[in-house]
Image (cartoon, rainbow, N blue to C red):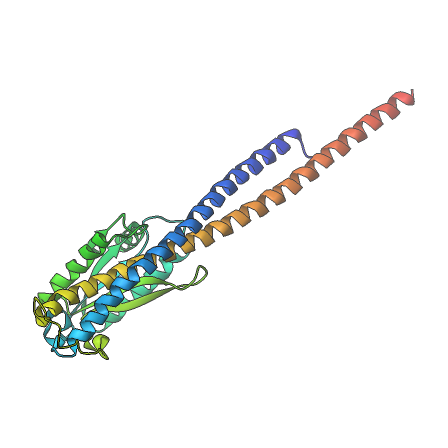
Length: 293
């Protein structure tokens, strides 16, 4: 027989689940609002990157861009892998998926006899690799939620300086590409060396333009800005993907909490009915016993 103690326990569990449901619902709504803001940042940054790319294409037509230090093709002996993860959890399989791509990249490079330097964005990735004994050359924290241009410049300059100095021969950038609110795909992009083919198909700048500084000097300045823009784009895409993954995870948690609360309510109602039925039977039995005297 269900006692009053069991019913009280069920009530407490229902209240606890409903409190959890309110929290996950609030987190779901916050994540949904941040997706919109993150998408807006991606759109706002796109014209800058496109203009830099177009200007470089125009300048590259009449200049030999292959001489730039960031375009040097060398024998690959040391590789860097930059991994974009989140600072916070509760985002479903977001971090697991991007870390899987990063680990596969590291294994492939080491299988070819190459040294791998690891760079990590986000506390989750840093904790993951530290637990497995992988030492990161550098960790950036506190930027995954709302990436800034300054943060992307710092990341880009770190690897560009080492690449230009000949300490790195290739740089991979692993992040999550935002397709839609329901689809985010972990991708691996070769950040360095920059491929000259990326600047193909440009139209030569009209001769009436006078350049100050010279076209060669402009290329020297713009190609690093182009790399920085690619890093910033990856951070923005990863941020939008993180919020989308968290929104889905919190919606699933909210739905599960609602289902659990409903099941507990049905169990409690059944226990109540059983208790009421037992009490009625006891009353009727007592009345019959008194009437038979």
